[in-house]
Image 1: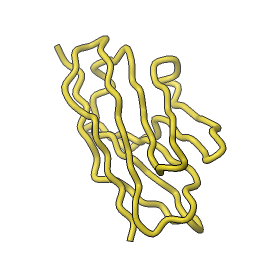
Image 2: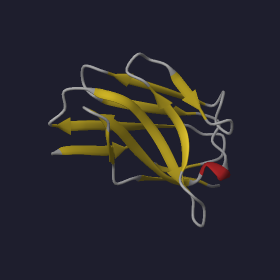
Image 3: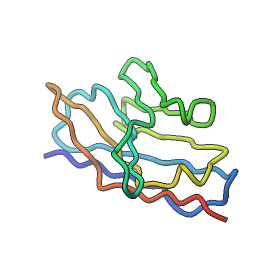
Image 4: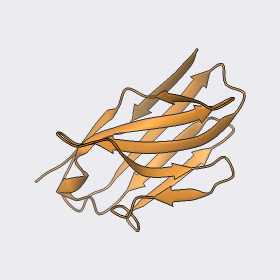
Length: 116
């Protein structure tokens, strides 16, 4: 079994910052790509940022320059530092991990609300 747990969401004013964290645990011997996705009400889930186990990163155009993704391979953890947050960043943020022979696991999601 594999568990994926996110933390760090909350309510923040426009222009503020949040740091999301994700931890994967269980029967893991290799974590491949880790990524953050988000889903706003009435919209499809979309990729925010992803990082390979070699440290290569990919960002959605909407967050480039405002977000930084990082990971600790030894701890199977990942973080997303989000700065200059906008109301349109409001969504449930999900952690996705691709592990072992390529199976995907999702966390339960953490709510991010950007509002004054």
